[in-house]
Length: 296
Image 1 (cartoon, rainbow, N blue to C red):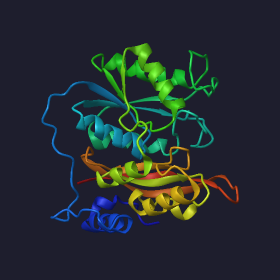
Image 2 (tube, rainbow, N blue to C red):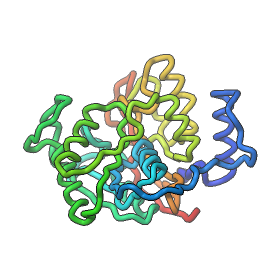
Image 3 (cartoon, one colour):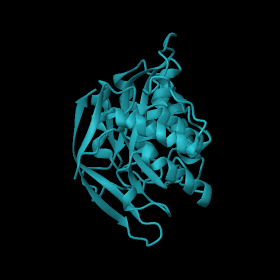
Image 4 (tube, helix red, strand yellow):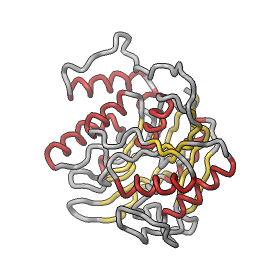
């Protein structure tokens, strides 16, 4: 296979991005230089030291960018992953994205930040929206993860989370934050998804589709960049009501590059895994087998 490179790797990515936005919105404003517009520099004081919960996907990445935009400092990343003896990457967790988990640590390398890892040993024992401390629930794995972060970074005050519409997820992160005296920072919460998707791409979140699980999405969509997939995702949202950002589990993503990265990720080898062969909504994902990082 050809390596999967960030679309920002060359000027072609910038031109393609502009063409996509012009197709979606003919009035879309062009930048005078033809170059990607980076977020404005932060000119105000840092207000909180933040640990970012990262899945590897676009939402957790973009929420980190919003944290920085709002004056916070990302000091560490945290990730919950499948146990080593798990038979597959997809755990069907209610709380965590696990597809692409093996490739998450390299994101910390691209940001020159420490990352704290926690194996997911629990499951969704309590499945109601509200949560109370429950033995063997996967929420307690999140608690253990953030306890470890607090032990090593006692000055951490905030937790970045990329939740958009999942009250199940947001309530559990909030519950853990309350127990640890932390502030949950969820800048994407209840954002309109089509506009948010466009904003992510415009802001330089360079991610690929690594899992599909919805009518209208299939094997051919795996490995496509967010920019490439955006017209189809918006069309499916308008015609069939899927969540354009995948908040309903329709797809998952993996970030190759963004303005916070000092290096970019290139995927060299993947394996396509069939999790469910449903004829109408097959569940397929990419298992990352080999990757490397490159300087920008």
